[in-house]
Image (cartoon, rainbow, N blue to C red; front, top):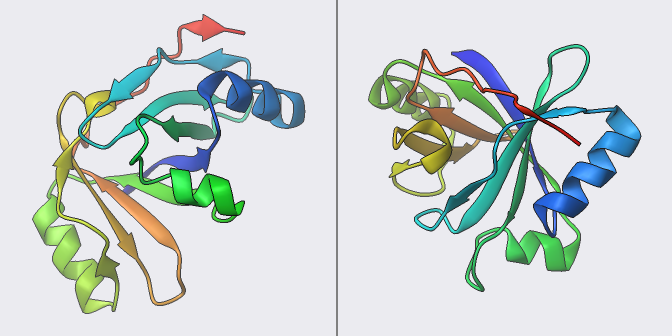
Length: 142
C-alpha cells in the first residue's frame, strides 16, 4: 500500500480550498472531478511538504457526505492508499478485522479504477484505490 491522500469533507470545493489554504497553505490543486457514481465532487491539493489532501463535497442530495456535514462530524474523513490488487488488500484488511462500508466502485478522479472504503477496528476509515501508478496532476493555483 502506498499513501495517496487524506480526505476532508467540505460544503463546497471552493469553501474547502479557502479553508485549507488559510490554515495549511495549500496553493496547488488538481482539476475538479464530479463523480455521479460516488455522489461527490472532489479535488486534490498538495501542501509544501507534498502531503495530498482530497476535498470532498456533496454531489446531489443523497451524497454520502451530507450526513457528516450536517452533523459536523467525521470532517477529517479518511486516509487513502494506492494498491495494485484491491481484492488481495480487501482480504488482508478483513482478516485484520476491518469492515467494508460498500462494494468496490469506479472513481472518476482515478480514471474509472475501483475504490473501496473500510472501517478498521480502531474506527479509522481507509480508502483503497486500485491504481498503483496514479499520480495527481496539480495544475491550478488559487
